Structure formats: structure tokens, C-alpha cells
Length: 86
Image 1: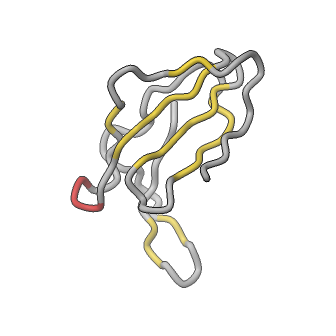
Image 2 (image 1 turned 90 degrees about the vertical axis):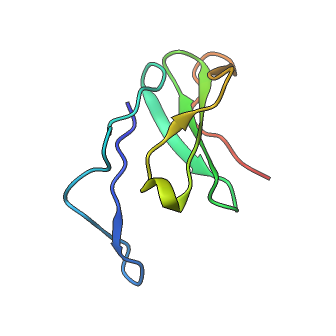
């Protein structure tokens, strides 16, 4: 799963010790990395073990809770480790 923690200090990046409600969020096998889009609306998790990408939507007013996108996960190939958003 993917653990999400609130940022308590944006200047230093310090995290709260308590995870977001519902964390960890289910992803594929061996989630390896997370990428967030430039608008901070979507999060993508590269799942190395299952060779797919889990897609989530979130907004500041949901407190960081991740909601799966319909049709997720999306196949990406064996050994997927990273995803880049352009």
C-alpha cells in the first residue's frame, strides 16, 4: 500500500507522525514510486511487482485521502519502477 502523511512544515518538508485517515491506500504489488501531477490533483504509483500503475485523485479538502480512479490500475509492463508526468 501507499502511506500518506500530512506535511506540517512546508518550509522544511517535515511530516506529521500520524498518517492520513485510511492510510496505507491499496496499490499494486511492490509499489515502488509515487508521482503527483503539477496541479496536485492526481497521484500515480508505479507498482514494480504487478507491472502496472495505480491512479488516485485527491484534493486539499479531502485531507490527503487518496481515491482510486475508475479503471485503475493501468498495465505498464513488468518491473515498472518509475513514472514521469509531462
